[in-house]
Length: 53
Image (cartoon, rainbow, N blue to C red; front, side):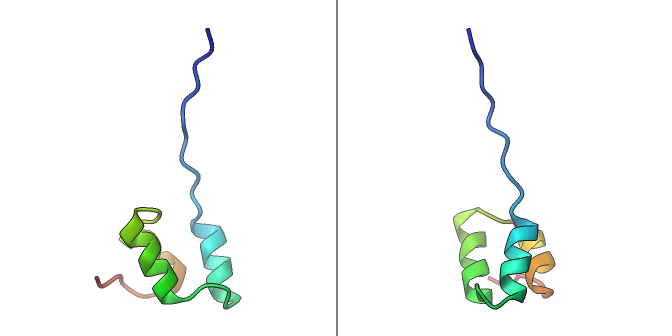
């Protein structure tokens, strides 16, 4: 019997690059935090500012 485990992918480096290229905005990243895709700490890494809800 096969057993698969889900290992979440850390998208922080990809989002950080997209942010630096102007492909996503702070509001996009805030939305990712609200949806649970990134943590407030990851938000700070991505945009360089503390997350404020």
